[in-house]
Image 1 (cartoon, helix red, strand yellow):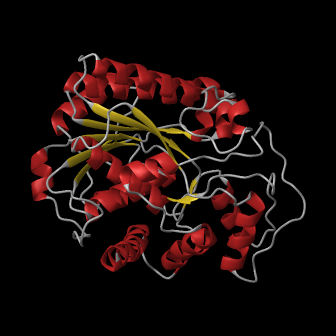
Image 2 (cartoon, helix red, strand yellow; image 1 turned 45 degrees about the horizontal axis):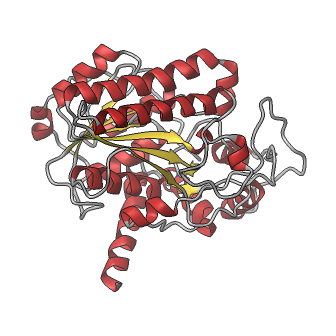
Length: 388
């Protein structure tokens, strides 16, 4: 069901503003997810799951977009290829390479940098801890220093809700003032990234950085096109192959949200920073208004959306690393600050995610399926705005 077409690599594109003017795109701007005019957005990790949706949304809203990613796995390389058809040129480099990063930003002269590049999985954090810290800590450090040196106007720095201390997670819905202190390589790497962000934000307040910045602590993001070793892709792969799917902990609670809502929030945040409508240096939770959907609930919804050939095992899958049983995230501050709301409700998350795969199965390319769902989402936004 999910697209598995791959290429081993994609060519590096040298980025200049002239490329944007000459580029032809398969997606024409069709209304706006925000007031983008001629701005350039530089996205690290652009060929990842969230990055591909964000870049497509930005292109549809009229922004110029430049990607910066290694794209060394097959899924990322495929996304980088189809993003290039949407006039999203890419620099194929490593966020850990500071000189390459600075050179790309200096050449591109972006209005906003969105930092998404990361090793984003819990399991590999335990298998390759040094790599996880290297990418997540040194990658963030490089981005923070690069925007400071180049005077980039705005930075959206993305981390994770896993940055909070376990005691805070056990106390209820976690707000931004809860203590940091994630345990395990991946959570700890995001905690360190948040500390680095805080210190660079303080440099801005002291006048030694011109960049206005905010850090996003993301809850769990789902949607079509995710091929990583995570709950939803693993579940859909099992359904597609006819195997029963076994969850690790059906009672685990997570702040599930659709990638279209998250990308919209990122756009609103970037615009607010550029327009100086919010303070610089904020860390914000991105989470749905209600966090009451368990793993078991989501798996059942996915099975119902898939149809009668989806089978759920009553046994639990083994887990080789520790996981928090409950993670509730309070995203009310970001929602109020940005005027941002989730439009894909919890009950519709599975339907929308499975529908993306069906569009691809029916012959649409991943780029076309993504654009199709974004247009429907945009129409809902416009209808809501008109009604109000």
